[in-house]
Image 1 (spheres, rainbow, N blue to C red):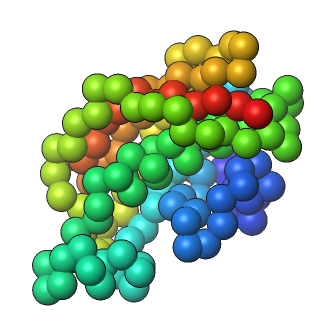
Image 2: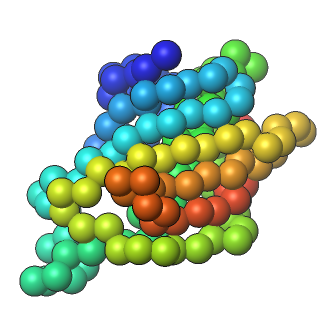
Length: 141
């Protein structure tokens, strides 16, 4: 099951310029999601990170993984209308730089969700090459 940007906005509260996923290509309710974010070069952060050599800030790559995970978590019927607040990230590794024109393929798999706390394992790849991996944690309220 795929979701366009408007359908994503029905699940998670993020909005431009901080909605960092363009589409969800696969969604297995309560289990996992795969999403894409294509970087055009017109994004606001490229002007200052870094002038003449634009690179996606690693924290935004991590946030895009978290937003993919939020689609999984907030897409569950019991979490409809709630917000997932980022509560931590473990084992974060950045493996390659991401530049304008790249498309991040994001994948997040729910590891645990109980007592208002969720943990998910996520990756971001570009053309099949790992760019970032992390275990993300969030509080659902």
